[in-house]
Image 1 (cartoon, rainbow, N blue to C red):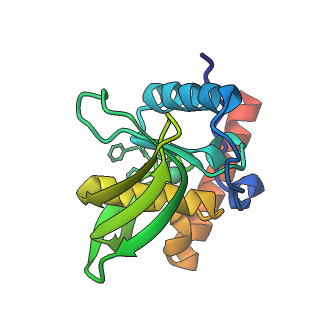
Image 2 (image 1 turned 30 degrees about the vertical axis):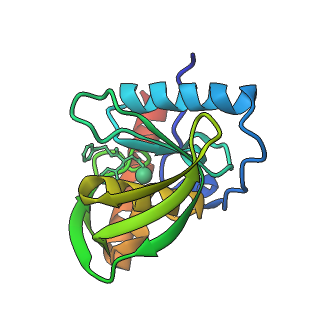
Image 3 (image 1 turned 135 degrees about the vertical axis):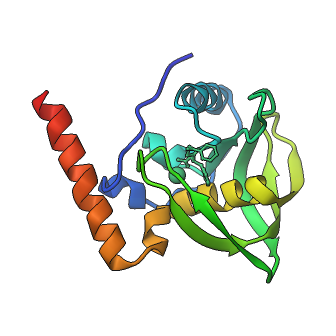
Length: 170
Ligand code: K1U
Ligand code: ZN
């Protein structure tokens, strides 16, 4: 297994729209293992392939406290989303250190292929629903800061660029 490099906002590659996975073959299974390990090491509850510069519709998630219930969503499609919305604080491994409120559907249904190639329907509420919607946005090239005001987003962009410059200088 290998740890993958996570792209940091405002890297333009984060705005790439992912294409569907064609077959769940050995390459995709290795990518799933590497993404899962990368998510656990980074202390995340989700990771989209876009974030590791692979532009295919693949997500790994684990919202369990024990970190032992990984979910794999390949070619996920939202089949239903509640009109009821919920405001939750979100973070992102591609925007380290930034947390802010985003309003999303409180409950959703998603169809996706799992890591064994089986089609599954997932009904989600709470943190799982938030995380799935956040990760599916990544596959469309959307980062959660795009829900914030232009003022906040520009401040975040400036902070991230400064952090990158400081790291490069060190
Ligand atoms: O997409 C990602 O970068 C992963 C992201 C997922 C996410 C967290 C919170 C709300 C929506 C989506 C993270 O895991 S950020 C990591 C984090 O700080 C966190 C971990 C557990 C709960 C809440 C935040
Ligand atoms: Zn994210």
